[in-house]
Length: 215
Length: 215
Image (cartoon, rainbow over the protein chains, first blue to last red):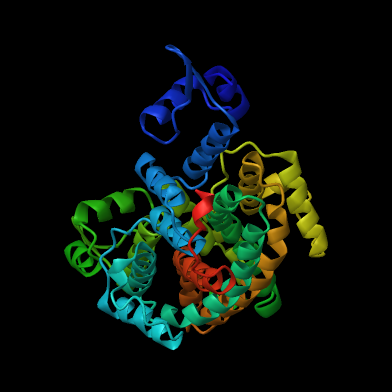
């Protein structure tokens, strides 16, 4: 297809497509004449992926490039998944509290994980230590205790995620599902967490207004 | 304490504190002279909460004000929790796909929930339908199937959250823990999800590089 048709099918305007081509987010089409290039379904697919990363994931051009590089590397799926996760997890600007870092390390020890002696080595563990640092700065010193039940619940979720990914047909589809599943899944998870809170708080706390003398 | 000491204890500069006072994010201090106001620990606590909402939650001034209004209303904890969740969940600008809306409604029916016939009535369900709409736009039509295992895992997490919240001493501390737990918890959850993915993908997929003939 020509660039006009690619724009129509994807809903992305031609100037934006040309910008992505210049930024290397989309591979060049096959030239059919000096001024005309031909694009195929792989371009359409990649274009939709780029939009999902930017629109839902809120990723910058640079982070999108990191994700695509991770996808295109010749590595095992497990390694690729790790690289994608790193690319979409921005290190936080928060100063790490050494006690929060110790919380993360204690959690890894409880889980029998020997990796990550240095939490700053990975964006993911840095993000975790930063969140616990903020909690500590507002007087919540025991949020680290939540990590174990969180992991227990998230293993059920991760199992469903990985089975979903493995059901995809081609190798390209598996990798794309990994990225979409992680980015879109974060938002889905956030929303469903609110619904789970509502259910559990209704059962545990009940819907009782505060007594009169408390105000 | 004077405003200078409040700044020192909170790490928030005086001009920023004055801005929050003008914006109504922080209640006025008690005037001790025409040019001097006195602040107490409640101000410090509220100031730290405002910073956590902005720095970790990435909330705008307007959203912070919504959260504080929800906190200060005279309602049951369950209702307050719902109001806080609405305030921190921005409705997405994504066009909703009617099929994604149907996914959310089918999920509610499976869960025996009769609420939310209209997903646009709540920011939370709107966010959920928007995420599934994006997934559908990139060819992932079955992500709605993940909602049930997600909820299953998240109930374990919500149980831990609500127990953590209920352990807090005063009524004010409970409400603050709800807000901090939701905002900081989202980031913690995202990070721990990556770690759960790594564990599960290693067990299920293994760390095998692609065969030579696949490239």
